[in-house]
Length: 411
Ligand code: SF4
Image (tube, rainbow, N blue to C red; front, side):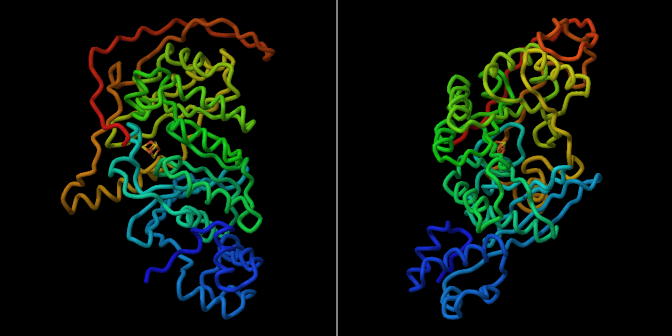
């Protein structure tokens, strides 16, 4: 008989379970505390539960823990990447990031991913399966165990599209925010999606009010179709209103993630189009100079390009942050560690049939970082400290005559 992992259950599920065992429902909360807060390794550890209940639970259930296969520490010491083995032998990766304001853990929600984003290593081996709520939660507990310290923030941004596994993700969020769990505020939880419009609406209706981050990466459908293929199903004309609705229902500011790729989406006209697209929304844009992904052929732009892209947005009234590169030396971007692991496995076996051939669109300009003259821009109508602005000219960019490669859309 297959035993079930109790960490997969919500409080309601645990209540039903203990009642089935002839116990009062308050035992469910005690059990939940052992599972989600006190991190009990065995049923024997659950000292305030009656011995009869512990023995009965042991016969049919488990309190599964993930097995740590690898831990890589970045050279600056602030980022740690973990590769965990699941009970069925599949692997997932999770990341710990130490910030000034505390520790963030980035969790995966699926083994692999079927969304086919051109920037992402997670999609390289295809989708294998959804993670259970307990497997998502256990990533946080395993890292906390390893660190011996608390976790203040959660980013649901690892391998997988969390909205493609929404029900399990919601159970995870409810457990980790609960008083019987780690009690992490929903305001300190960010979920990142490539833009599954109906699921964004479902998440808004869940009432959780977690922060939504949308991987935009392009300001127009033509380019976004090629970088984020789910855009073919849910184009910007549907995605942006869904974000506006999320903001309205939750009162939360939405983050638009924009991975800057050299020669592909980093031109001044693209910055202006991006500003026009999100203007008027309670949002901010997070610029991410893309990590180099060997299989994807993507390269980050130089620091000056990132700076003037940011300025072009800011002068149009869009709040912008630039994500500090953390852990590039340990493959910290989404799915890279698992991809390396799969690559190493593939090197000693036959090629994976699920391997996607997606690559980022070819750069419009030649690969070396172009020397750009700063674009001419007007002073912003803001009450900012007066500063001298350089006179800039728009850089001339050659139009590409190449078509983007065909790629597999999400199933
Ligand atoms: S970016 Fe996210 S949604 Fe896109 S392929 Fe990677 S894991 Fe999946």
